[in-house]
Length: 226
Ligand code: C5P
Image (cartoon, rainbow, N blue to C red; front, side, top):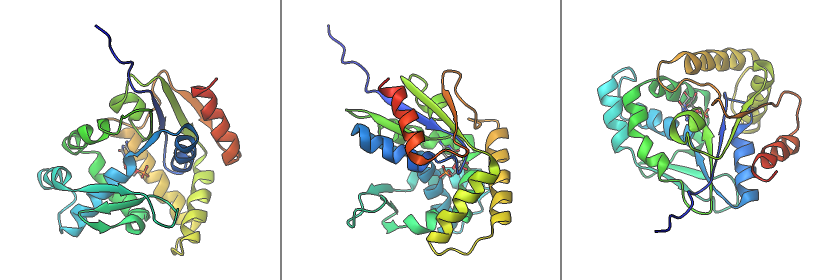
């Protein structure tokens, strides 16, 4: 009996602003692999719950919402970033805000919400390979991944990067406010009981403080293609 080898997975975990999103997209493109932006799933559920007027601390209601929310990723027609469609509405821009990040972080601490999103995430593992971006990709969702990376950067540097990103999108934010929000979200993500933000034991840690995008991409690619 012959068994097909498992589809290879590269997990890229880390806190917000560590550059995960940008790096994951570039590495996936380079390898010709699929991309799972798991943070977008939590953001989408938080957003859908907000749109439905749910109390974000109501575990049962939010869990039902996690099961029923229809989330689709669509290639942008203008060659730009992938669009995220939530229950038929293109919510890409709303999902990028810090408000959506905070809502995502709040509902992501609920074990039943995380459970509701497991099958969806596993479904992204398709040939020729998958780059999975998140907080628990290497520890919980794809513990058997052949390649694991954990990206970090100082909170000040991460706040600066987010500030630049959000300013470019025309959003009104302050650097100090962003850094406080990022630190609060990190500490909630790292201290939660279920799937806390922490590196897998077999992950390569890369501190990206002061590093350029190309340099980080090269380091991550070297994990897959030494
Ligand atoms: O990565 P991103 O900033 O889009 O994630 C938003 C929030 O979703 C995180 O702060 C975290 O609370 C949650 N999340 C998670 N597990 C993942 C991805 C994101 O708990 N795998």
